[in-house]
Image 1: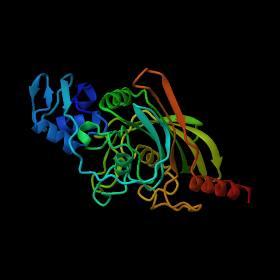
Image 2 (image 1 turned 90 degrees about the horizontal axis):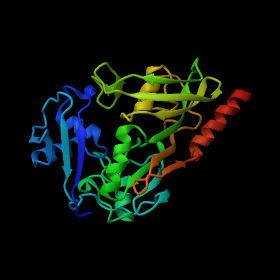
Image 3 (image 1 turned 30 degrees about the vertical axis):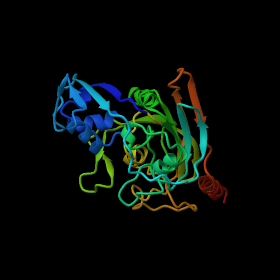
Length: 310
């Protein structure tokens, strides 16, 4: 794309007191905080018509304009990695990500990521300055399932707006330890960075709003198969919320490793992005996709069911 993309944000009450750079990075999918800081330094972000510092403390109600410049050559190296593409057209594509694949490059994972694979397969798709081409939302490395990718800035903006408005449907399947007394419910608990372990998130009064809807699909002895719908999209949200309810995700090495659990053949957490729905940016039609449980999770589920029958 050769044109800049401009995104308008209005600071909501829950972001009062938040830094400008943090607010923009959390409000606009696929813009890292470091890239937002670069945009602020370059004068591409204004608050109520004026340039501002990254550290500006927001008061609420401000009008923030974010201008993302045309794509620049990316430092990402295209890699011909196989991808399972569920759907594609000239505006977007839906990927069924395999467990073990990192979405974005990071220290320790500079290659072999979904971003590398996308650049190889779609070399003309560079969104938001080519920083993280086209990826609207992310899922954890060891979580499998569906995510949507924009092929140009207009699609990226439209899909990002749906995320902000919480109209995008994201439903997961997970097995947790223990049972819920109620067949369905909502976990409404703010999530922030853990105060001492920087790899973990936690429920904290100073965290960002986070809401998770769950419904019991099947009770499996000491475990429960849940269908989970995300209303918000915080880092590790399902894993953190389930631990908060003392029902950690089966096989979770970060939030459940200290608990007694059988592996049932798992080498990762039992968490799969099962259904994804959104309005198509070109014509506003509703699009919905479904991914069945991958083989490793199907095997673990069969072992859980077999254990009940013994």
